[in-house]
Image 1 (cartoon, rainbow, N blue to C red):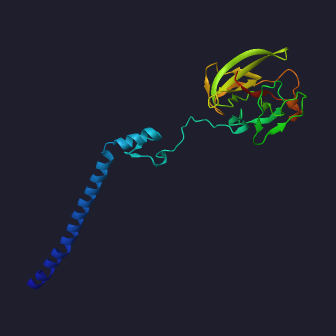
Image 2: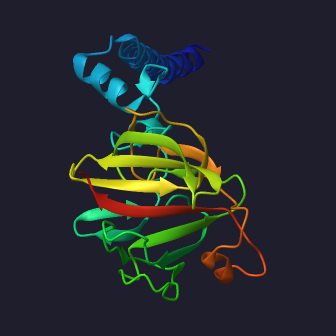
Image 3: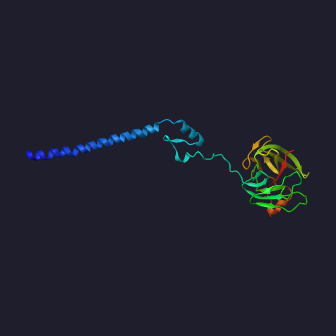
Length: 243
C-alpha cells in the first residue's frame, strides 16, 4: 500500500501543472490581442485620415475605411459623360450635341463669314453643293431624334438668345456661344427649341444642356435626304469670328 501511494501522487502533480500553465498563458495572450484590437478601433482619426475622407467621400466602417472607397482618383458621382469631338476649326474643337446623333450633315453656309469646319469621326456626310460659292463644310445640320436634349458644342458663355424669322417666313431661335479658350470665336446654333440657358450663362462642351431639343422644320430640308424616308429634328451650326 505505501508503494502504491508513492507511485501515483507524483504522477498527478507532473501531468496537471503544465496543462494549467498552458491555459493561463493562452488566456493572457487572448486578452492582450483583444485589447490591442479594441484600442486600434477606438483610436481617433488623424489629419491625414480626414483629408482622405474629404477627397474620396469614403465613410469609416468599424474605425477603418471601406476598401472599395479609398481611391483618391474616384470620379464624382454627378460628373456627366462628355460627348466626343465631331469637328474642328483650327484649334477650336466642337463636341457632339448628343450621344445619339443620327447624322452630321455638312453643307455650304449662306454667309462668307462662316468658318470652314473639318469633320471628325463617323456619322458624317457632306451634302451636295447649294451653289453658294462657299466652303462645303462651313455649316452643319445635326440630326437628332425627337426631344433629344441639345448639349453645348464648346465651353464658353452664352452671348445671344434671340427669336428671328427663318427665310422671312417661320419663327426660329438663334443661340450663340462665345468660346472661353478662343474669345474671338463664337458658335451659332439655329433651330433649337425649349432653351435651358440665358445670356450670360457659362456652359461646358459636350456636357451642359442648352436646349430641350432640335426643331422639325415645317418644310423639307436638304439633310432629310440622309435619313429618308424618315425626317427628324435638326440643329444648324456655324462657327464665326466675333465682330
